[in-house]
Image 1 (cartoon, rainbow, N blue to C red):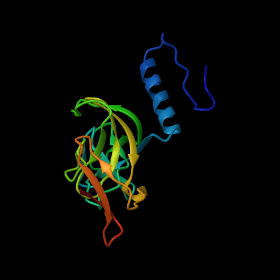
Image 2: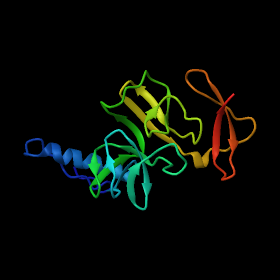
Image 3: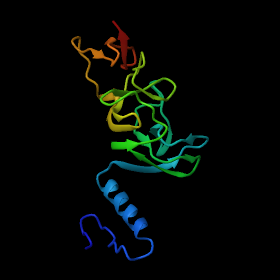
Image 4: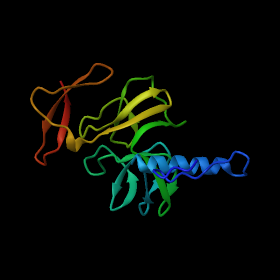
Length: 178
Protein backbone atom coordinates (compact mmCIF):
# COMPACT_ATOMS: atom_id res chain seq x y z
CA UNK A 1 0.00 0.00 0.00
CA UNK A 2 1.41 3.39 -0.96
CA UNK A 3 1.60 6.13 1.66
CA UNK A 4 0.65 9.63 0.60
CA UNK A 5 2.31 11.08 3.70
CA UNK A 6 5.83 9.85 3.00
CA UNK A 7 5.37 9.03 -0.70
CA UNK A 8 6.69 5.50 -0.22
CA UNK A 9 7.17 3.17 -3.14
CA UNK A 10 5.04 0.03 -3.08
CA UNK A 11 7.22 -2.99 -2.34
CA UNK A 12 6.48 -6.40 -3.79
CA UNK A 13 8.99 -9.00 -2.52
CA UNK A 14 8.52 -10.99 -5.72
CA UNK A 15 10.01 -8.16 -7.78
CA UNK A 16 13.70 -7.94 -8.54
CA UNK A 17 15.19 -4.95 -6.71
CA UNK A 18 12.62 -4.81 -3.91
CA UNK A 19 15.43 -4.29 -1.38
CA UNK A 20 16.53 -1.08 -3.16
CA UNK A 21 12.94 0.19 -2.98
CA UNK A 22 12.86 -0.56 0.73
CA UNK A 23 16.13 1.30 1.29
CA UNK A 24 14.78 4.22 -0.73
CA UNK A 25 11.66 4.28 1.47
CA UNK A 26 13.81 4.45 4.61
CA UNK A 27 15.76 7.34 3.08
CA UNK A 28 12.46 9.15 2.45
CA UNK A 29 11.37 8.57 6.04
CA UNK A 30 14.68 9.86 7.43
CA UNK A 31 14.52 12.91 5.15
CA UNK A 32 10.97 13.57 6.32
CA UNK A 33 12.09 13.39 9.95
CA UNK A 34 15.02 15.72 9.21
CA UNK A 35 17.57 13.30 10.65
CA UNK A 36 19.39 12.65 7.41
CA UNK A 37 21.16 15.54 5.67
CA UNK A 38 22.75 15.39 2.22
CA UNK A 39 25.28 17.93 0.98
CA UNK A 40 28.46 17.91 -1.09
CA UNK A 41 31.88 17.43 0.48
CA UNK A 42 33.82 20.73 0.63
CA UNK A 43 36.70 21.39 -1.76
CA UNK A 44 39.88 19.63 -0.64
CA UNK A 45 38.09 17.59 2.04
CA UNK A 46 37.86 13.83 2.50
CA UNK A 47 34.95 12.54 4.57
CA UNK A 48 35.05 9.13 6.25
CA UNK A 49 32.00 7.30 7.57
CA UNK A 50 31.75 7.80 11.34
CA UNK A 51 33.36 11.26 11.39
CA UNK A 52 31.69 14.29 12.93
CA UNK A 53 31.05 16.95 10.29
CA UNK A 54 30.48 20.68 10.24
CA UNK A 55 28.30 22.34 7.62
CA UNK A 56 30.14 25.27 6.01
CA UNK A 57 28.75 27.21 3.03
CA UNK A 58 26.40 24.35 2.16
CA UNK A 59 29.22 21.77 2.09
CA UNK A 60 30.55 19.21 4.58
CA UNK A 61 33.92 19.48 6.26
CA UNK A 62 35.42 17.56 9.17
CA UNK A 63 34.54 19.08 12.54
CA UNK A 64 37.10 19.91 15.25
CA UNK A 65 36.67 21.20 18.81
CA UNK A 66 38.48 24.40 17.86
CA UNK A 67 35.63 26.92 17.95
CA UNK A 68 35.94 27.42 14.17
CA UNK A 69 34.95 24.11 12.55
CA UNK A 70 32.01 23.80 14.91
CA UNK A 71 29.23 23.08 15.70
CA UNK A 72 28.82 19.47 14.64
CA UNK A 73 25.91 19.12 12.21
CA UNK A 74 25.95 15.32 12.27
CA UNK A 75 27.96 12.16 11.74
CA UNK A 76 28.82 10.88 8.25
CA UNK A 77 27.09 7.61 7.43
CA UNK A 78 29.07 7.22 4.20
CA UNK A 79 32.47 8.29 2.90
CA UNK A 80 33.23 10.73 0.09
CA UNK A 81 35.74 13.11 -1.41
CA UNK A 82 35.62 16.72 -2.56
CA UNK A 83 32.49 17.40 -4.63
CA UNK A 84 30.72 14.10 -3.88
CA UNK A 85 27.35 13.99 -2.14
CA UNK A 86 27.45 12.46 1.35
CA UNK A 87 24.65 11.62 3.77
CA UNK A 88 25.01 12.63 7.42
CA UNK A 89 22.80 11.60 10.34
CA UNK A 90 21.91 14.49 12.62
CA UNK A 91 19.91 12.54 15.22
CA UNK A 92 19.25 8.95 16.16
CA UNK A 93 21.15 5.67 16.38
CA UNK A 94 24.14 4.94 14.18
CA UNK A 95 26.34 1.85 14.14
CA UNK A 96 29.84 1.92 12.65
CA UNK A 97 32.76 -0.49 12.75
CA UNK A 98 35.13 2.47 13.21
CA UNK A 99 33.63 3.19 16.64
CA UNK A 100 35.37 1.60 19.61
CA UNK A 101 33.60 3.01 22.64
CA UNK A 102 34.09 1.49 26.10
CA UNK A 103 30.45 0.71 26.79
CA UNK A 104 26.97 2.15 26.84
CA UNK A 105 25.62 5.27 28.50
CA UNK A 106 28.70 7.49 28.11
CA UNK A 107 28.53 10.98 26.64
CA UNK A 108 30.53 11.34 23.45
CA UNK A 109 32.33 14.60 22.67
CA UNK A 110 34.16 16.07 19.72
CA UNK A 111 37.85 16.54 20.51
CA UNK A 112 40.55 18.85 19.09
CA UNK A 113 41.64 16.16 16.59
CA UNK A 114 38.12 15.78 15.23
CA UNK A 115 37.62 12.40 16.87
CA UNK A 116 34.57 11.24 18.81
CA UNK A 117 35.59 10.36 22.36
CA UNK A 118 34.25 9.98 25.89
CA UNK A 119 36.76 12.55 27.17
CA UNK A 120 35.67 16.19 26.76
CA UNK A 121 38.24 18.66 25.41
CA UNK A 122 39.52 21.45 27.65
CA UNK A 123 37.80 24.08 25.46
CA UNK A 124 34.87 24.26 23.03
CA UNK A 125 33.03 21.33 24.63
CA UNK A 126 30.32 19.88 22.43
CA UNK A 127 28.28 16.78 23.21
CA UNK A 128 27.62 14.76 20.04
CA UNK A 129 25.56 12.01 21.67
CA UNK A 130 25.90 8.99 23.90
CA UNK A 131 26.97 5.39 23.49
CA UNK A 132 24.51 2.53 23.09
CA UNK A 133 27.23 -0.12 22.63
CA UNK A 134 30.94 -0.28 21.78
CA UNK A 135 30.16 0.39 18.10
CA UNK A 136 26.84 2.24 18.37
CA UNK A 137 26.22 5.92 19.02
CA UNK A 138 22.92 7.71 19.60
CA UNK A 139 23.46 11.09 17.97
CA UNK A 140 21.85 13.82 20.04
CA UNK A 141 23.70 17.05 19.31
CA UNK A 142 24.16 19.65 22.01
CA UNK A 143 25.94 22.47 20.19
CA UNK A 144 28.22 24.73 22.17
CA UNK A 145 26.17 27.70 21.01
CA UNK A 146 23.11 26.68 23.05
CA UNK A 147 24.80 25.76 26.32
CA UNK A 148 23.63 28.29 28.91
CA UNK A 149 26.39 29.15 31.34
CA UNK A 150 25.82 30.22 34.91
CA UNK A 151 28.10 30.00 37.92
CA UNK A 152 26.27 26.90 39.20
CA UNK A 153 26.80 24.65 36.15
CA UNK A 154 29.44 21.92 36.18
CA UNK A 155 30.17 19.06 33.81
CA UNK A 156 31.37 15.71 35.12
CA UNK A 157 33.13 13.38 32.67
CA UNK A 158 32.60 9.61 32.84
CA UNK A 159 35.99 9.26 34.58
CA UNK A 160 34.85 11.64 37.36
CA UNK A 161 36.72 14.82 36.35
CA UNK A 162 34.63 17.91 37.11
CA UNK A 163 34.72 20.90 34.74
CA UNK A 164 33.45 24.43 35.29
CA UNK A 165 32.64 26.91 32.54
CA UNK A 166 34.15 30.30 31.79
CA UNK A 167 33.35 32.61 28.89
CA UNK A 168 36.25 33.97 26.84
CA UNK A 169 36.43 37.42 25.21
CA UNK A 170 34.70 36.10 22.06
CA UNK A 171 31.71 34.82 24.02
CA UNK A 172 32.74 31.16 23.67
CA UNK A 173 32.40 28.75 26.53
CA UNK A 174 35.57 27.11 27.83
CA UNK A 175 35.38 24.15 30.22
CA UNK A 176 38.20 23.97 32.75
CA UNK A 177 39.03 21.11 35.15
CA UNK A 178 38.36 21.99 38.78
